[in-house]
Length: 153
Image 1 (tube, rainbow, N blue to C red):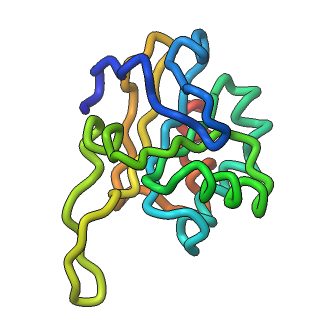
Image 2 (spheres, helix red, strand yellow):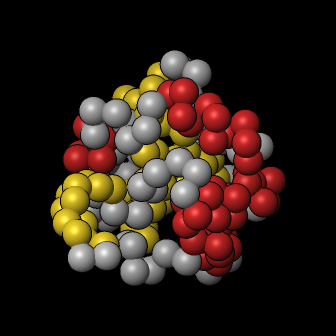
């Protein structure tokens, strides 16, 4: 998906089995961030960046939603362990990852595997992609601040 594209109405199922729909966030901007795996160092730092800045993000009109391919149980443990105040979509079938073009071949430590590219989409109040943060742009420990700087422009 690209800047200006309208995102799908049904985004997925959260850690509690609830449907997450675009219409649930009408009038808000959405930070839809895709991350590789619950409870790994980089993903935990990124989630905690959003947690630590959550109140300010809400005041600025942002809703935060995380997405990874782990199941609801994994997400629930991740949320409880790090006290995350936002939903995590369990994209086990990788449908949302594929729709947004963030799932594919990755390389690390000399091995090739399939996985999620750490990517964040800022969705405007009309449900259209306003901004995209690519893996090379994201600083996991400061990612919420990166997004808040956008809103300050």
